[in-house]
Image (cartoon, rainbow, N blue to C red):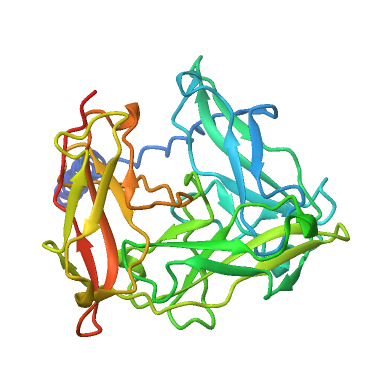
Length: 355
């Protein structure tokens, strides 16, 4: 019995030792998971608010439904950088409850056109930027409002030229038909286009244009319809919105390069010397001559800029100024040919202008 007990004891000891070795191996191979570190929050950069660096430079006094407002950061470009996108907001009382106002113009977010949902609301605009000390700042405009609705008058806005028909690359001019004693405080003309002339109007105004009453149809306008509007005070000091008729669709016409000639001042074009151009076709081969358009370009190949004087009594004449020195010039005009087809007569390119 003692021999059997010794063997049993030995076997139990060997089994226990083997189990201990296996357990130790498991512990080494599968160590307990490491504790998850507590995340350290990244501090959100704060921006200081600047309330005296933004102005509402257009359309905010008062703000009118359907007429565009423009905000501007009135700092020198050298004193700020990394300007972000403008954000327009509206509020019921101009004090609290500010919410983002939808409808900011995609291509220029400093522009906002109040809609019917903004009537009676207050508006403000803000924009982030870095100041000259690299400090993150946000400029906030003065509060404007409440937004008003002006009565629409469809008899006081019309077109002086370029609308019958509207042609790509040609100017259209809108005018107020009232006498000067019947209105005052006229704002900026707004130009809109639509696919069908009934709805879906989009603002296509050139807000950098020197003369906002003039709009030059672009290739993107081909097949579209156009209209113009302007806000003014009538003789009773009431705000009204003059809305033009709808014109279009915009068309493109064939260009003819052998139907014009310069007959004064073009060889070479000189600052202060008048240039004159005319149609070189026989009188029985053209009719309905439109207003001449003058353009300049730095290289004479692209980026032609309209420099026409549309108030001139003799639009076939152009006198280069010092601003034209070193530039190339050309002129064009619409006419109807002997087969009743509308054509665009384009001159040769002349220049560069010398002093």
